[in-house]
Image (tube, rainbow, N blue to C red; front, side, top):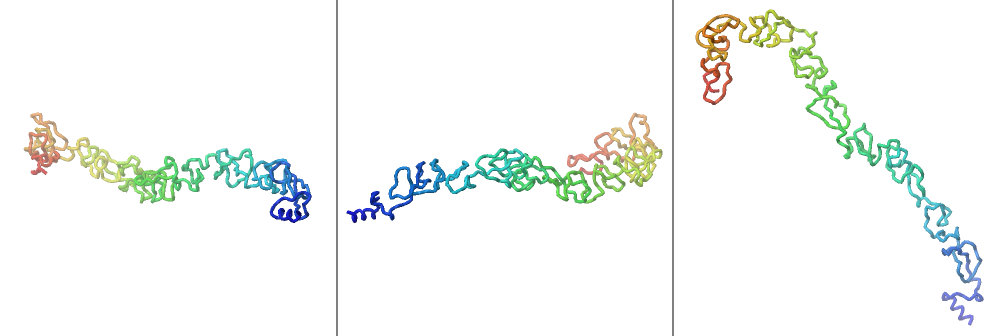
Length: 356
């Protein structure tokens, strides 16, 4: 019978208590929480009873979720009995959010089981001292600041709010004023751009809206007025004494000397020959002709040779000066040497013998 029992034990059977040999014994531990791991050793035995286990190392035999095979949890306990509480792999990363913008400083990451006050689970803030800078912000033009923390700023950022850009102008001559015809829209200027336009010659540093107008045939101050035509002309310029030409006929009034840059009709001319500077048709002594159609051009024989416009003739007709030529249609006020020609209408309006 002993031989048969031995064979049965060798095939995996459990020996009866009275048949247990030293070779059949194993360590037995009390498993009070029934998690398969024991804590208090009970000695050796050939059999296990309820509440016992062959496996020891249970660090808390009152808690069935704590044993060497248990997953480690973030609960301030050593769940897997490895001597470590709340290991890093179980903890959540948190970031300090000092500017309270909802994003924390990724350079100061710490892992915790519970959320510390003032910390958040979202990082990515590249400036945790500025609540306007974070991954949720809109990139705007502000001197190279990376508002949305994507590693690029201002004009280099494809997500830039284009309404925050400014207009700049190239300033090739370095006078502080740029060429309005070549605007560039961007966040900030480079070394060749300025934010003030208005330069009418960006290759001449002496020509810009702040320059002084001088006598040089240039529009120095870019106001579309040149030399004598510009009321801001430097009075200290080397002006020339001439005579006023109020009627713009190219003849000056001997009673009205003026200081000008150059001889210019309507401003000042280099002669004082005008006998009447209020009448552009009266300047030098000349023949005056009968002007029946009152188009400013006479015909026939001279009526009088004078400088100042004469009174109408005995028939009440105005007289016209010789300088306007001879009227080829003395009874048609729309035809005379001073009438603009209309081409290809079959009429010689300007008395030159041709229809354009």
